[in-house]
Length: 66
Image 1: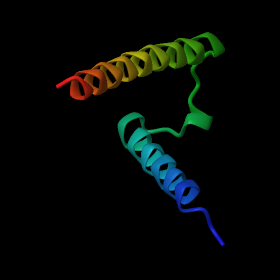
Image 2 (image 1 turned 180 degrees about the horizontal axis):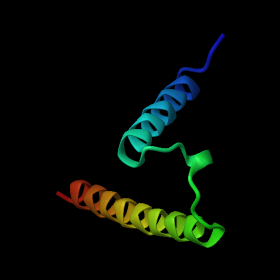
Image 3 (image 1 turned 45 degrees about the vertical axis):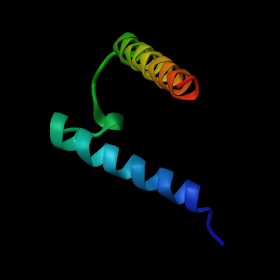
């Protein structure tokens, strides 16, 4: 038996991999960025995530109170 949520996540990862390959011409594992550059990318993605979460939380709060 498979977990549909896990399978959905795998499909999302495959789609992101294909998108990245199309955009950058290389898979993450073959990308020659330095360790520091990878950390910078991850940090920026985390900042974006925080903004997206804050927006969703604010939207949910607004929806609840109307």
